Amino acid sequence: MSNYHIKQFEEYFQVYRKSVRNPEQFWEEIAEEHFMWQKRWDSVLEWDFTKPEVKWFKGGKLNITENCIDRHLPTRGDKTAILFEPNNPTEDAEHITYHQLHQRVCQFANVLKDKGIKKGDRVCIYLPMIPELAISVLACARIGAIHSVVFAGFSSKALSTRINDCDAKMVITSDGGYRGQKTIDLKSIVDDALNDCKGIENVLVAKRIHSNINMKDGRDYWLQPLLDKANNHLKAEVMDAEDPLFILYTSGSTGKPKGMLHTTAGYMIFTAYTFKNVFQYTEDDVYWCTADIGWITGHSYIVYGPLANGATTVMFEGVPSYPDFGRFWDIVQKHKVTQFYTAPTAIRALAKQGTEFVDPYDLSSLKVLGTVGEPINEEAWHWYNENVGKKNSPIVDTWWQTETGGIMITPIPFSTPTKPTYATLPFIGVQPALMDENGDEVKGNQVDGRLCIKFPWPSMARTIWGNHQRYKDTYFSAYDNMYFTGDGALRDEVGYYRITGRVDDVIIVSGHNLGTATIEDAINEHQAVAESAIVGFPHDVKGNALYGYVTLKDSGESRNHDNLRKEINQLITDRIGPIAKLDKIQFTEGLPKTRSGKIMRRILRKIASNEADQLGDISTLLNPEVVQNIIDHKL
Ligand code: 7RM
Image (tube, rainbow, N blue to C red; front, side, top):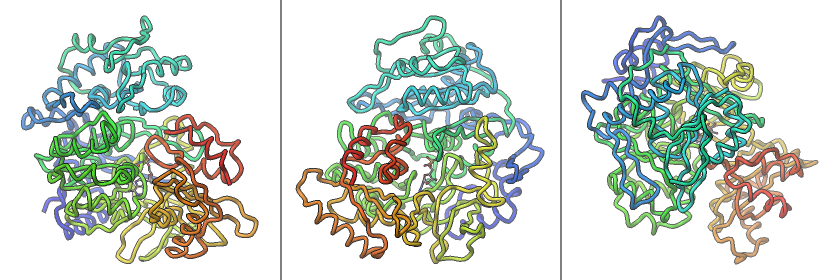
């Protein structure tokens, strides 16, 4: 039996037990046998959640790019590392081999050094999903610079806030990017942002859409001529196991984004190990995660995890709806994708279009399907299982966070029996706990509580950049000696976990705890409903009452809204009980969403509570325009 590759349910239990009984011995063995080090560590783990401080493999020396690239060269030099599928389906896909990736990363790293970037400097990357994005991330890691990727859909204001928060010295961007039929002018957004950023010395600009852009003399440089002159070899910087690898911003309960800091060795080991097992990756697979590298899912499961395993990882520039809603399946067929990892919001959007966009494609290459980002509702789960997986590919519902760095609760496909809407069991080395309001752990099964983690895992974020106190307050203060996730969860009769949503999405009505996700599931069963979001608003008898925002599949006024309201409340009564009935149901054209597809219930809650004047900055939403419309039609 190999601890590195779990193939059976029995093995999962055995390895899990080992990993929690003696975590240091367990992770030491994985680190030793499956990675390349320049110097061995002095201690495997030192930790103290009260400070909080966590150190994995202290004193160990390595470079993550040697593990992700160099070590594969003798055996996989000509294998495709990155398979780039452009926005335009008639443009050829680009196969970047490990050998080519090595050269391109070294060239890029030499350019960074030439421009004065040193170990520990922060480099902001604001690029669309083109190969330069993955390559620049790796180039930073090669020289020990800390990358801070900002999703290229964020506004100039969001960009400047992130550049200034970490004092970045350089921005890497492009003239623009393609997204379906549209182009986005990234360079002008950067120019705007930099009016507020005094610390930026240089901007490197990749050419993608050949648009006419402004280049500021002495500050801005076209990337390609610099790369052409750069040497394609560079010895990797020797990094300490706990040296910072990257910062990635995530939104918190307050307005200011949190710069989550991840370090080198633990992050590498956990993303690699989870990738191998959660996707049951084997040598000739073609793995595709549809996320953007601007999110943690892209960092861990497009770039680092797959490359650390010598995998072929697909990078898709476009959107699921271009040239039509069959694009994902066209790509799966074309590249014979074996593992496909996406978000519930994408599945729901595709399901809404009907099966005529899926049925024509040969999806028989698929072995494992994954979801991540939010709770997946039953309807979407079944649609995915039936129409994409043909009931023949296990679905891994993977729960994790920017803060956790890697997948924490998940089935192991072909081993763990799956159950719709359940992320199932903790991954190897992960020790979850459910906590009640009094700060006590809820033991046993068929219980619910707030999801915490009791013991460090290798890829946990080490701090919030520049604000360790906020890190402590947000994650280590709700419960003693626990990492608090901010999510609620239940554990069923066999110990499976179901993530019920952010704890701030639980609404207490007349003393009853109601999960918005549960109510939304009930509503979404209605055949006319496309999507819904429930929030609480103050009620003088019940404490809180429920306000539902509902979008319909057919937005035309073809249905009587009062009848629909009755039917929806009847469904809720049937599924949950009359206590969960909604006081108000507003039909709307759309729901405000983050760029990663999460419904912004905070905004809906303010509107329902007559606090629409306190919405704060909504410019980073995917669709800020729906907000005014919702306010105008508030009930
Ligand atoms: C990977 C990612 C984290 C939050 C997390 C949850 C929610 C993520 C699932 C999920 C239910 C899942 N990082 N979440 N995965 N909820 N089931 N499988 O999304 O930092 O952007 O978001 O997302 O609330 O706390 S994230």
